[in-house]
Image (tube, rainbow, N blue to C red):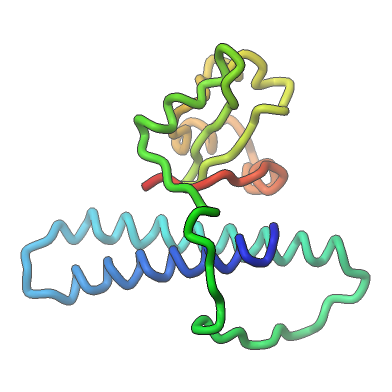
Length: 158
């Protein structure tokens, strides 16, 4: 993962988390369970991106520092066009049919499975691409985190 993509995804997640915290803190009536689900999803995306970034850097470096320097978020200038947020309707377009890319979502993260042979034609063991497969993916793949870590991230569900 490129550094600017990494920081962009971190900043967007932090922004979304702050919005949800403000909703919970406000005097307005909100569906707290729904806000907590969104917060949980953002935290999982942060964890996934940080883990992926660390693993990629460990593979590219023989010696990994025992501690990481602090990065001041104010100095990061994200490219807002880099990270894509998909609605479920937009994700449905990427079904792997008629030459379209093959994307699937798991835990709010959208992955590109176009080059995975078992996803040829947009299907994989009766699962269809272009969908959020969170509940189905975990039951099909034991240790699914290692499978997902190998896939390119193309965006997030909004």
